[in-house]
Length: 291
Image (cartoon, rainbow, N blue to C red):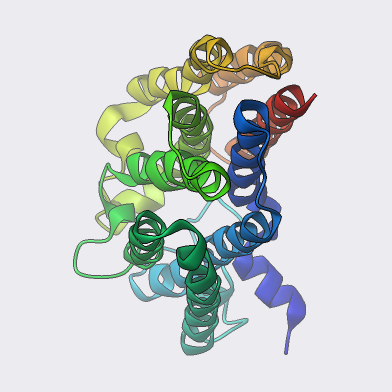
């Protein structure tokens, strides 16, 4: 087994996108109710990571089948298109990850009831449907919306529900804030790949909006989370949200760089920096909520 090829397909450097919502949901539960259900948090963390890994693997295999990872690809190489792993094996790996997430979900449903069952089914189905089925989400302008819903509101709100059996405005606002930042990550990825995506018939948000429109959408996705911090803070009996503001200068600098960067491989760096800002925002918010 070629471990390095599997790691390339799984893209573990972006796993913070599935880890941080669970961290923020847990910290918020502590700040509001002083309650943390640690076994459920651990299961939610593993389940969230497995869904992301399964989505990444499935994306790698199916994009190759659809011809989306040709020689004009600007991003990092894909293992299926490069011949490092077979599409069948990568799909099996994706199925194993989705099965592991479902296994975690069995316990989570016992803790959180039917809302967690519904969230889990929709999350796994969306992970598969991102590039699977007759109308893949990744081939429409709705990819960022699904990321906001499942890697933001769903993940933060679901974790908070597991700890408190409640779902209030702070959890929804915090989930939306993280989801917007994660949506910005996908937007950068899609903007980097517009030429290859257009060749295979994709109609991503970056393609539909055009370069100037995409820049403004990116700015909105990156800045709106800061406007949600007061809404979260006003509802907190304990903890603070202001530490997350420390990342605002970095965000402004990144928006400026996005607007001025010529389309090409430079967006690989912008993608990495967007992931890092999402992670830093989440960690500082979690620290403020706990401390």
